[in-house]
Amino acid sequence: MYYGSGAIIIHKQNRMMDLFNKYGAICPEKAVSLDEIGIRRSFLFNRMEKRKVFIDCGNKNYYIDNQAAVWFKELRRKRVMITLAVVLVIAGTYYFYAGNL
Image 1 (cartoon, rainbow, N blue to C red):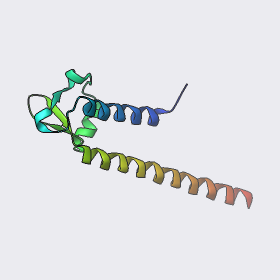
Image 2 (image 1 turned 90 degrees about the horizontal axis):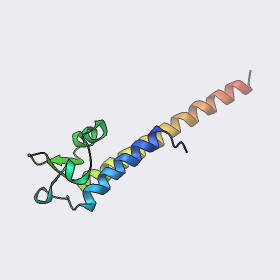
Image 3 (image 1 turned 180 degrees about the vertical axis):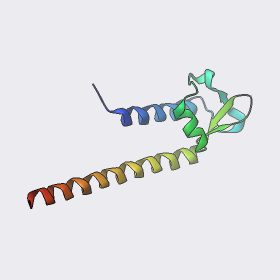
């Protein structure tokens, strides 16, 4: 079953955040390596690190900033809603003008 690339990305991002929480890596004292929790460094991980969802404590150990994770999910949700609104406006404009020709 095909869910679309956006859904796959969201699933992978959520999975990474869930793994950090599952392993208790929620503060610098409990930071873990990516190998410990089965995550490989990827474009998605790097993007989330840049947005301060995952914090590097040195020695290749990371933890999740859950407050930043909530902000990240909210930003992601807003982007989806804005994209849908733009698509609906474009589709509505097209059908309005196509019906008046």
